[in-house]
Image (cartoon, rainbow, N blue to C red; front, side):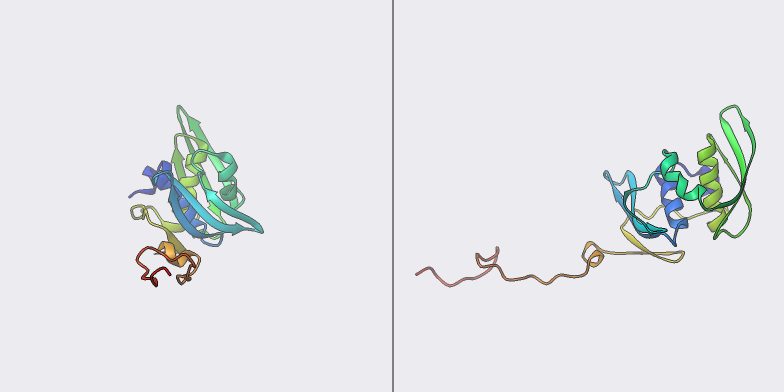
Length: 161
């Protein structure tokens, strides 16, 4: 998938993947329509929705990492910027229907190049630039079934007295 075509959830996902020093875990909410993250950005914990494509407040985590940001032009319905980011590999050009989308696409391109894979719509843990799927059980560790005084479905208990 071309970075220049990323929008919505796909763009939010790849921005989160690019923030590997901040994001520890990516998961999806709202029936898979919203990217959510867990992480810690410079002492500020984050646990919940991550929607930089629709919110400047969220996109600020990307702007804070800009070393250089030049808006070249804003024509009818579009924006073009050249940006360089902390942790990125090079200065890149981003284009989009808004300045926010152009900056986010530039951010992803600076970390992953001009193309990325499809969105992996499973809960995943980030280890550097790599994402590994994790099951619900491994998120907080595996818990053993503890015995309950009233029993559980399937328990064979002694007959009543």
